[in-house]
Image (cartoon, rainbow, N blue to C red; front, side):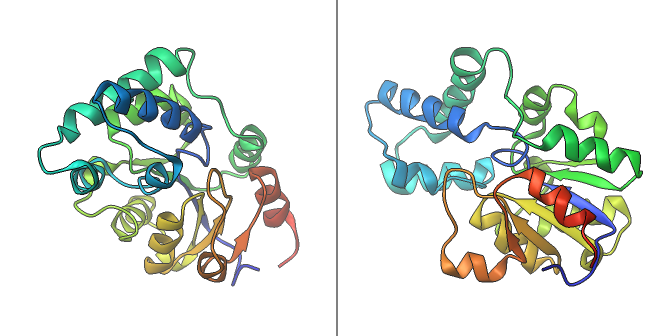
Length: 219
């Protein structure tokens, strides 16, 4: 399934390592009511994998140029960790075992998340210390599906993009990884991949447990 064994893994965060997209969904729906507007899953799914600045622009496209997108986004994030996940974001199945397996082999690994660094650190809650590199949405000028964040992560790892394997849950992330010249495995979260995204991904797997099995299998 993979063109060759990777020399590094690059992890997305939300919906891939952390079971956070469900938390965000609850928070966004609660926040939009406070702003006197409505949101459904079709609208919410359009924001998955996007950096904050892109989300702000899209919010104004949907709700009007006068919509206070920055205040809404801040309120939704606040609700995420105060009302809906006060004990922190739960880990996705298979993450603990996969990280332990990579650590035992000193396998280079990075996080590349569209989330801003202060929020990413809050939600990771120390998990970032188990990675060599953390690259966040406020460190790039163009969000996914642009490849910038993945290329920055590879540069910091000092590993060629072609030797990196990206783990992603979103269509935007899959597109970004392929645009970066990297291999990519998709582990869908809230949204199942279209036939186009399935064709772009080198594999579509049910969980991170399956990633470890794939990496352990002979190539």
